[in-house]
Length: 456
Image (cartoon, rainbow, N blue to C red; front, side, top):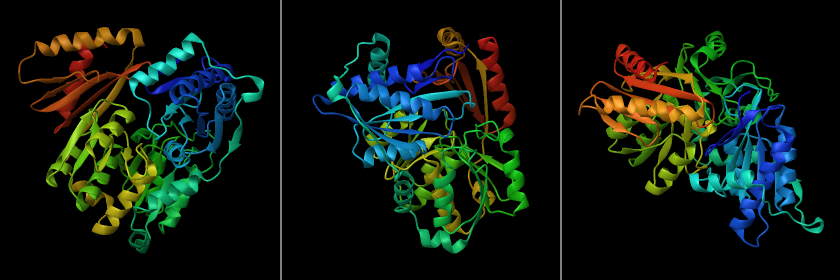
C-alpha cells in the first residue's frame, strides 16, 4: 500500500487506503487550527476548490467539516481549476485556500494543497506547522454555538476568464479565427477553457470535455498520452492543439501538423511573447529547459533559477519583480493574473504570439534554440532518497572542476556539454532524472551515468 505522502507541496494518497473522509476531517482541523493561531481572534475564511475526480466531493465535505469545527468560514467553489481556486482566494480576500487535486496522478489518487491568502502555496516552515498540527492532534475546536458555516460560490470561471482577458489583445486574436483542438481530459478545465477560447474567437474542437474525472487517458500530458489529440489536430486541420492536466495548471502543445511540441515549449513560447513587449527578469526552476535563458538573454533579460515547486518560483517572481515565470512541466505564471501556474494564461500568450507574428506554431518553435531534454524516473521510497543523492554527490565531486554542482533541489550537475538533475518527487515515492544537451546522445549518456551511479 502506497503511504500517505506529506510534503511542502501538500498531501497525496490513494483514496480508500491512505486518504479518505476521516483523514480529510483531520486535515481540515489541522489547517483550521493553523489559521486560527495565524490570524489571532479573527474568524478565518477558507476557499475550497477541487478537480473533477469522483472522490473530490467526499473529501471536500470532510475538509469543510474539519475547518468549520475550528470556527472557520468555508466557501465551496466546486469543480474549478487550481489557478481558479488560487485567484478566488485572493479575489474574495480569504485567509487561505485549499485545492483537492492529485494533479497528473491516476484517478485512484487525490490530494490536498494548502494556499496562502494570496493564492501561493505556503513556504516550507509554515507547511511544516500545518503538518505538526495534523500529527499532534491538538486542535483548536469551537463550542456548538461558535462553529463555522459554509456557503457556495459560483463565479470562479467568470472571474478567471475576465482576469486573463484583461491582459490579452482580444480583438487581435479574434481576428485570426484560429481553429484549436482542446483536450481537457475530463478534468477541471473543461468549462472554463472552452469558454476562454470562444471569447478569443476560436473555432474550438473539444475532446474529453465533460468534467467526470474519469480520465480518457493517462493524465500526465506527455507525448505518449497525447497521440489521439495529435490525430484530431491533423483531422480538423487545426492551427494548434492544447492539452491540460486534471487541475488545468499545466499545458502541453501540439503544432499544426499534429506533432507533440510538449510542455517545455509552453513556457518558452509564453516567454517569447512577453519578452517581445519588454525586458526584465523571468523565474524558472532548476529542471526547466535552457530555452528560457536564451529567450531572456536575446531581449537583454535574465532568468532567476529556483528549486522545483510552484511556491519557490512564485516567491522568486515577487522578490525580483519578474515579468514571466513558470516551470518546464507546462506551467506558465503571469503575476498580474495570479502567482500560480495557469494553463489559461499559457493559452492566451501562445495565441497572442501566433496572432502578432502571423506564424504557425512550428515556425515559432523553429526560431528557438533547440535542445534535447530527456526525463525519466524510478521508484524510490522517501527514506532511501538521501543515500542515493549522497552517492551521486560523492561521484561528481570527484569528477573534476569542469562540473558545476547545485544542491538546492536534489543535485544538478552542469557540464560543458549539458546538464543533468536527480531529485526526489514532492508528490510521489519516486526520483526523477532530467538531462538536457544539444545532442540527444549526450543527454542519454548523462541519464545513463546517473542511473549507473544510483544503481538502477
